[in-house]
Length: 153
Image (spheres, helix red, strand yellow):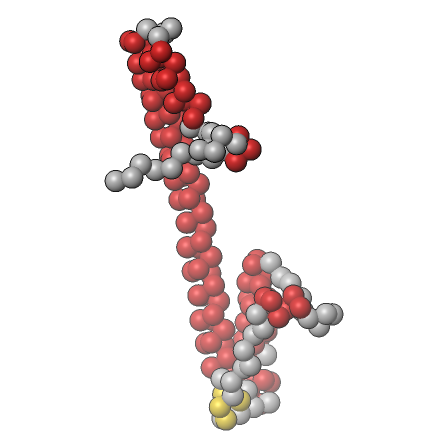
């Protein structure tokens, strides 16, 4: 940024950790919407008071252009984020539906296999254990239940 013709660099912004560690340092936590509104408000102020601020030595062309660029970047990033959220929700629904259909099919196939070998046979008893082993860990401790590991390929 140029201030009255001289080069000026803003100090780096504090990290979230630094902000959280500051005690009563006047750090205001704003929502994303509030931050966009703040930028728009300041942009309007800079445009409205351009002449007076220029007389005070500010490079208004630079300030307005830079803030417009920041605002455009934020709005584009927010739009991308919202689009990705929508895709994520749709993708989750698709994955859940596919998992449910696959599980129901596999469960039905297991039931048919049990029926094919005779419901009361030793082999059928072993087949039924497959279903119960899915959530049981190798050590037999049911408190540590999880999904089975993927097959080694």
